[in-house]
Every structure is written in C-alpha cells, then in structure tokens.
Image 1 (cartoon, rainbow, N blue to C red):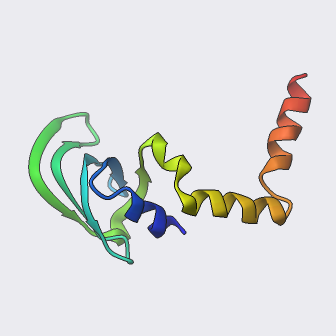
Image 2 (cartoon, one colour):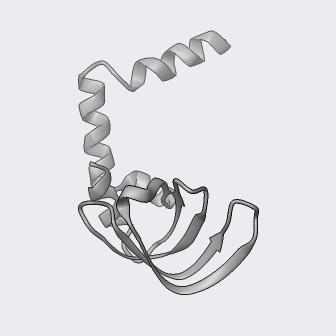
Amino acid sequence: MPIKVLHEAHSLLVSVELKTGQTYRGRLVSIEDNMNVQLREVSVTSRDGQVSAMEHVFLRGSQIRFFVVPDNLRHCPELKSFGREKKGKGMGVGASQERSARTA
C-alpha cells in the first residue's frame, strides 16, 4: 500500500528522512518498488541543522526511515480503500471514538 501512495506523489514536494538523520526535501521524480527514489530541486538538512542544495539526488530505499507526503494525498483512492479495509477489521474508528470519549 505505501508504494501506491508514493506513486500518487509523483512530481509533488516530499520530505524523506534517512536512517542517518539527514532530511531531503524535493520534488519526487521517480520511485521504485524497493523504495529507491529520485528527487530534484532538493534541499538537504544534515543532523546538525546545516542546509545545502542539490539539483538531483538518488536515495536508496533501504536507507529511508520515513516519507512525509503532501496533505492532499489523504484523498487518494489507495488511502480511502485502505481505510475501509481497516474499518471492516475493527480498526481505525474505535480508537478515535475511544479518544473522544475520554476527553468528554
């Protein structure tokens, strides 16, 4: 499921954090099934906060900790069908209902 969502993010601005702590923010050019990604117009933030720019970068999927994708992808069909599957298995809705019951 995550790969399908990332394919929907093609040409959008994403952030990628590596296991080393570096963060890359740029436009998603391509993504492979093993999560190797290519970004362009990239700003790189190192662990110590130093920022640098790169025109193009290739990141190995095995080194990626997580992605941050634009909020508008929450409406993509892959996430909507994923949400329905979770609700059907008794997950998803109950946690938010329980949380709101505790705060009331």
